[in-house]
Amino acid sequence: MINLTKLPVLNNNHEWLMDNEDYSELFERLNYKTEDHLIVYSYSTDFLEVITELVKFNIEFSHHSCHLSDESYLLIDINQE
Image (cartoon, rainbow, N blue to C red):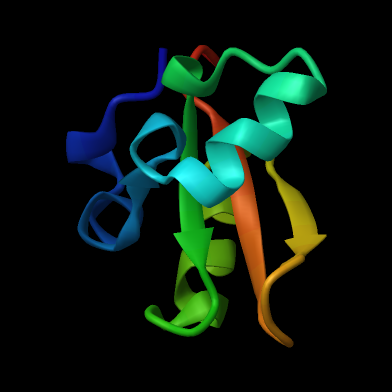
């Protein structure tokens, strides 16, 4: 499981996927466990800083285009080691 205290940029810039209905419903249809995922929005964070930290600590993530806007977001599974 990801230790968010060791990832200060991510810790300050994430939300839980299950807390956002627009996104959680989309991923539930794709059989994601929304309670196991974090979401980071490009419009509300320093996206490059978050990505840099994730790469530095070898944390896998996926990048997605937002279905509601011209923005994008990252999905991170918290069950990574």
